[in-house]
Image (cartoon, rainbow, N blue to C red; front, side, top):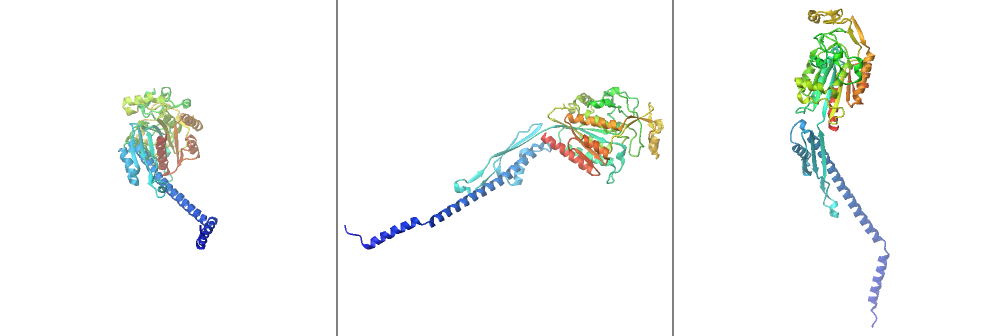
Length: 473
């Protein structure tokens, strides 16, 4: 075989040298590595962007669903279609495409709404690995039980409520407005009848009304009012007092009367207890008409408020329903202490500290003033007199000290708390003693120290808290 030409041999040698040089070179490998890392970073960053877009979308859709089901579950308060309401929420948020299904499982006594959603996005970078869409099906559900609420609204109608508050408004006027605002919140339009309010106005003591006074066995020796003199021994329980064993409170005044007040340490029949009502119009009218009397027997007010929450008093409610005094639908109140579907609440307001209990020394029929018994025909004349000192009584005796009454008040607070009753208290334009009594009685942080228009704010906050507790009970 003939030898290759030198030109071919030279070409082959060049090719061999080039291969060796290429194999030994490191510059090309770094470039490839750099390109690989760049594309990896780009891919990871892009996928992260897709995930952030998806999470933002998911949170918006979930938040809209949560708001929608909460509104729909409570819709019975205002009427309307739950499914339509949910759809309106998604339409307003521009998220209708993610709404899959609305399930309304509500019943007469509860609102139960569930929403199936499918939040998702079209990917920008994930599609490089074959994923064109990110989505995550979810369900949002809200359930609101129609919790029964029993409220004892215990309000101070003592003579000091005639004074002007720190903003120049008569305290009684401020109370009427604030308490009616409370009723408006507790009973919205199209409300259910699962909430009842008893209003217990108290001055020196509490008038349960002649009907209840007699149902409890009371014997009346005058017709001006119907208050029993509840002894200290009756403060170890929250059951109804044994009125048959108690004397009727005389019709007397201890402190001077003033314009705007009605005669009596015991409130008259027009200012007696209003029992278990779910009619906001009746409740507001009662608050409009309520008038002031003499004395501050806060312990009596709370004692009666407690009795109207005590399940042992249901027989009285049934009797009042039979007589037409209250609606027959409420004859099952008060519920048992441990009823899981019932919330029991006391709202107590005062503008002063608890006072000692005074009584006239002379007993008998008539009206008591400074000089003892005043004949009936003198009452109208005295109500016209400008000599206010004529109204006070100096022939009197103290039957219980202020400290004893404060102790009895504290005992009732403790009994209620032990049964799970939620107590809200308001000290309105009062002194340190009155504030301390209210603060010690309140449940947890449910105490309010109010001046002027802060009274409206206190009642507003209490109503909001009660409604919130009903949703979470």
